[in-house]
Image (cartoon, rainbow, N blue to C red; front, side, top):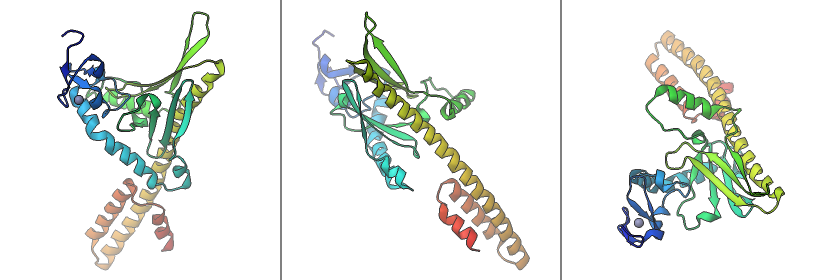
Length: 278
Ligand SMILES: [Zn+2]
């Protein structure tokens, strides 16, 4: 186990030296090539072999689903979100985009070139990391944290030298994932004013999170209104069927189907059109 000894990668079996591998939380080694198939913000010392495998299996699909989410855009604002915006965090260039309806965002860092997938992060995971258990009370507390409209989870940390001169800043995005825990975007700066971009990006992500929550509340209210209309419609259809010797069971079944479709978001504006027509 010397400094120059080679170890086999647990995924591809290639023997690699110390500079070309990382040690997983479960003590096996992962080579740099296999690591590029995982989330670039994941820390290998937090990542078990199984969790590394899960990332390798899922990242491509998550990125594809995120891309496709823009195609479902109901309005032009969503397609405007599709393009990446560049943020120069001092010396460190990153790109960011967000779909506030889906509640997910992507970050590309120039420090991660060679990684296979652009990772997708989700606002319902963007809370301080906490070891998860089966504890139901904890789950409820966490739900409140996710939906807390006052919270500004993304922060900026400033680093100063001995003379008190600002040398670097870091955007810190908490993330409730065992392998990631925090997304840190650090950049060194030459001028005090360089820090504005860091605060700008932090503010942008906090605002996008709030938009996502507000979109969700709006959707829920809209769904509730549709459900109430559907209840009335179903009751009327059942009464009519009962009075005229029609199929009561079928009327109930249709009402339930519509209720499920509303919850799944399958019933949209067209539903209102139908309501008002009769
Ligand atoms: Zn490997």
